[in-house]
Image (cartoon, rainbow, N blue to C red; front, side, top):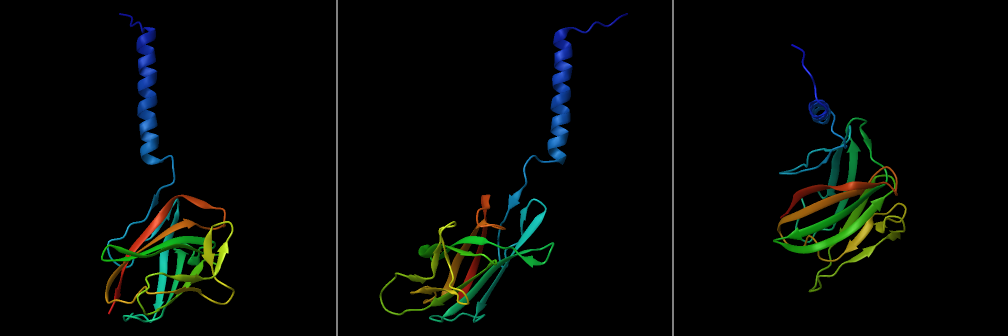
Length: 191
């Protein structure tokens, strides 16, 4: 008995083959580079951009912050595979406490380490003054050479847990915006 294949059956077999092969390729080789960063405790895990793993490197002086302290904060991102600093980082920093926003602004450093000096100012004002320069390409604050970016105002002036979210939006070059910014949320305790 001779089997005859109609045009409809042939089209169906070709279509089904493309679906099966395409599904296999997509499962094993996703079409886009995955970008992830999540945090449920300290320190935040590495974020993946393609085959690179970016790790938040943040330090504060003093290490144990007390209410009203002046705080120097150094923020960088390391390429875990190369053990080197990512250059040209732009971050948006959002600080809140008990659901109330305290500070939200953009900061940039060409060498990859954003240094912020929080100078506590007493009094009833809740406003902040930022001392630095505006970077034209990133529209973010950058430090004067050899100095940190100065943030004057009441930031860490109460004891408790502060919620900090760092959103990384540029890396490697001032013009290299990430398609999807990476979020690094964490808590900062002040006694």
